[in-house]
Amino acid sequence: MAAPHDSVLLIALTGLAFAAPAAAELPSAAEALELLGLADDREQIMAGKIVSRPIKPSNAREVAVGMAFVVRESPAKLVQHARDELLGDTGPKNLSKGDFEGEGSLADLAALELRPNAVERAKQYLHASPGEDFNLSSREIAAFRSLGSAAGVPAVIEQVRRNLLARYQAYRAKGLDGIEPYARSKSKSWSPAGDLRAAVEASKALEKYTPDFRQVLLRWPQDLPKQLEESFHWSNYATPYAPSLILTHELYMPVGDGFVVGQRQFYVSHGYNSEQAIAAFIPVSEGTLVAYANRTSTDKVEGFGGSTKRRIGSKLMARQLSSLYERVQKDAEK
Figure 1 (cartoon, rainbow, N blue to C red):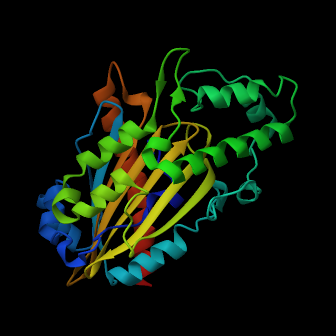
Figure 2 (figure 1 turned 60 degrees about the vertical axis):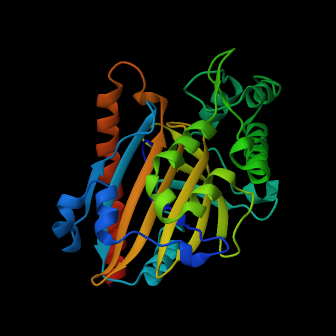
């Protein structure tokens, strides 16, 4: 999410304890703020302010931001509120969305349309080529080309649905190893899996406080704990770059009296490459401290001026996250 969006931002809830839940515990409020580089802002945060800062990226393609705030609500109620109100977002930027059930089928994607500008978007798919403008594999590009340049919108939409279903099923079967690379040139490709792995490796707190969660993110779908809840959905979202089709994996799990929360966007058609967001819902005397870290992979921050682009990207992301969480806080406190 080089340009994160409302329904995706709040991430779903995740955290693991495997066979020994007592071994996993969340950091204290002070430790969480230290990890996010927000220790000096503790007084403001505990007083109800939302504070965000760029955090060290794991690689040259990543924009990363950390933020924290307190909501006067218990972790369990806040998590439920977040799931009900934010993950079900149907705002104007979320053009359409749907859930995958089990192994998935084309019926799960029946509501997907290429809006807005369906005719123009269909032409873009039919004439797609390797590069950074479109995140498509060589196989997907060939499938659109096989339709012929005169193919109509319905035929293109059907192929888009088939591509998304194939990506979902491959990820569901093999996790990160199942993610099909994006074609960048005739001889080069890039896979979101590498940056998603890097995002996990950079999340040092996972290893210290919820080491099993770190392993699940890396090894999924192997060795899943019984406490884990999951969901998958697709969305057609109006990012600042272009309408983007996104496949999202959400995981839900309590850890002690709090929650660790997370979301992985393992396919994004435009604007950025992938995203992984992790948060801890930590019980404090004032209610719940939410400590959040978001890592987004985008080719737009590589090369000359990349560090400046990352800083700008992080500030943009922080503003969007702050706006979202202010809404969460106000709604929860009602």
